[in-house]
Length: 263
Ligand code: ADP
Image 1: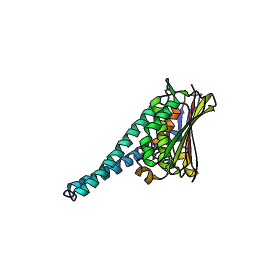
Image 2: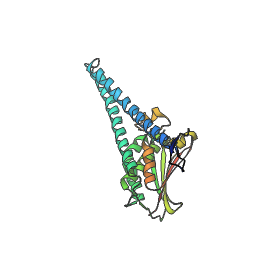
Image 3: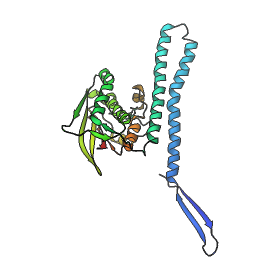
Image 4: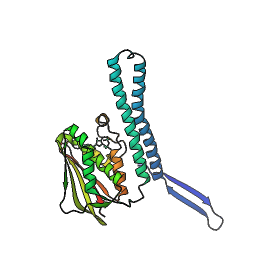
C-alpha cells in the first residue's frame, strides 16, 4: 500500500524558525477509496436487477404482449429480480444500522441456547427444501446467558446457518455446537456452525467478511445471496466484543465460530 504524506511548513517569528507538520494520510486515503469502492459496488449490484427488469418490461410491452406462456415466464423472472433488489436494500440497511451502533454495547442479556433453537426453527423451511438436517448440540450444564442484542444475534446465526445449508449442504448435515470457551478478559461461549460441504480455498478466507466479496459470484447470486451476510455478522460480533473465526478445508467443509463474552 502506498504511503501518502502531507508536509505543511509554517514560518514562525524569530527566533523560533519554522513549524513543520508531517502527516501520514494513507489511512484517510484508504478510507476514501473504500467508500468509493462501496458506492461503486452498490450501484453495480442494484443496476443488474434493474437492467433485467427494464428489459423484461420492454419485452412484455412488445414482443411478448400476446404470448401468455412467455408473459408468465418473464413475470417469474421479474419477481425474482425484484426480490433480489429488496434483499439487497434490506441488507444494506441492516449493515448501516449495525455499523452505527457498533460502539454502543448491548445492555440486555439473552439466552444463546434459546436463540439457536429459534433460529434453527426459522430456517427449517430452507434446510428442509435443501434436504439438510441441522443438528443442535448444547454442552451439558452450561450457563447460556450472554450480554447481547437478541435480534442481532438471531441475524448472526441465521446468516451462518443459512450459508452452511446453502454452500455446505452437500454434506447433508449442518452441526451447530454451543460450548464454553474463553476470551483474553472473560469467560465466553462459543458457537460453531460446522458443515461438511465443499469448503473454501484458503486464499479467500481473509476476505470473506468484506462487503460483496463472494467466492463464486454467480452461484451466490443464483442462490439469492447479497454478498453482505458475513459483513453483517462481523460487525454484530464486533459490537458484542466477540470474535469470529473461520476455518475451512477445500473438499471437507467449513466451520464458522462465534465467541461471545459470557454474562
Ligand atoms: P452471500 O450473500 O453471497 O451468501 P456472505 O457474505 O454470506 O454472502 O458470504 C460470502 C461468500 O462466502 C459466499 O458468497 C460464499 O462464496 C462464501 N461462503 C460463505 N459461507 C460458506 C460456507 N459455509 N461454505 C462455503 N462457502 C461459503
